[in-house]
Length: 332
Length: 294
Image (tube, rainbow over all chains, first blue to last red):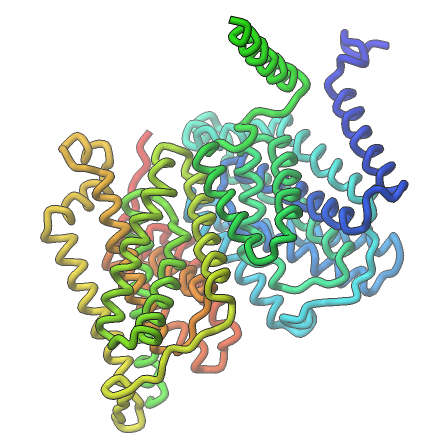
């Protein structure tokens, strides 16, 4: 069978699909056979939600070059709106409706926030989005319907591995396809040089807002998943620290690398899982690690490259080369 | 009217603290374009050093203030040398993440050593405990002291920046780092000096807050830090008088909002002001908008 001159095995989309399905199947088997306990599944859900958040923030910060420090704000909107729905509509329809409403509400706020603030550049935008996220948090903390600082509890739980995987795959596919489209290219052009992009006739505000809305929508979906896995949500969960955590994943994985964000979320998730046994020193070690990683590898794990079979093969060859060189030196 | 004046008095003392912290943010941003998230934790450390001096060493107020400023000055320079200097040529976002890392390190390292519980400064005695009555307005000696110390420190800062050689070097470096280096200015020393000045002011703010509000904890720096940054942006980031005006403005707005019954929303209002300022005049109150050149 041939697709556009290539065999099926050579088609990149097909390979990605196979790779994704293999990951899905492995974890599904591990869960079904009970090798992964509920504790580890909770870690997987946290990592999965962080993957969605990081990929969507990477679209805004890594690909469009707009520095946002308020991603947790969109997440909280998704979580709360989804919780309102799932507390009233039962069953899977309620779950799906909740996720849709959560995502759309976050996207709507994304438009309202994005339109005025995206005219700002660099750090000013970061501070404006930070302020916006804090305002959202304070509102949730003080109005009656969200039950103030105590938050909403006894939320119905729906998220299992197939649902989680489906949403991660959907968000990654949406982001990657957007980046390969004409508006996505425009976003990358804006990151490279905003003035030049404008001179080439790109409506910069429009594309920045588009990227911002897609990012906000995905963050809302992530928040909704959070509210349908964990039985309780409270405003503190979505504070400034959460926004920072997401940004750390994106920068650690590599700005402008989707696989970097996924890898970053997994690596940092595992690190914080291993550190969780040292309750008191956990954050100290985490902070130390963060500073050391940034000093020695400021471009992040992947830089702006994507992880691919070719890259892995090249890295493997490089290692083998080093190994052979060592061997030769040893003989001499 | 009396309530109004009382709020002004309270606002001025709170604003002084914000202004002192904001100065550190604005100077560092002016010179290396970095939002130094660790700055608010230097302020926290300052409060703890003051606490230790007064409780364990039984030192007086002035001595504690000076020791705290000195310790913070050293801490600020160490942070700059260890964490930011290796990243001088890296992407700005990497430096920002490092700053956040340092901030976590100070907060949680402190929490590890002194535990998370709130501590109280020793009882105020003698001249510090005095209060004055002007009609129905209460003014405590402490409030006068806070404003006075802040004003003195600000004047000293202005003199250093405007009249000394190193101040001139600071101004030159913040205008154009490369050109300054070509003129023979040691940029690294100048940047370290900027961190030292800013951190000393934050240390002073920490001690003043400690005796004014009487309670300190390892995460106390976070919210005042954000608000001080808002103050710096409000006045025009990188501009020293701007940070002072911004600090007093934010302090007075905050006390007025909580004084007239909106204390739950006081932080939200501060951030709403920030967003409005950024939308209307992104360069801040005293900032000049620069035209972009291609």
